[in-house]
Image (cartoon, rainbow, N blue to C red; front, side, top):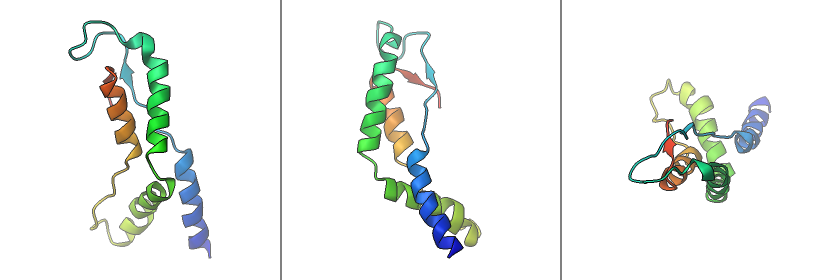
Length: 102
């Protein structure tokens, strides 16, 4: 019963976990000739919404359970599941012209 409760709670907690990209807002990035830092707040908000709308919390929670509960049970022989939310968020911010450091 305790394991089932832990699994269900981890599904819910993954929805609360949030990825925050580290952005270099001091200079120009890539091929852009002007500074894009003035639009950073708007861009972060839009990218966060896009990433949340296009990821499934149940699937992301399943990946969390796989990585931290099941994989250690098989001595880390199984491959680690990759999360989609941070990659979507980072790609969106980069495509809007910001330098993401992480």
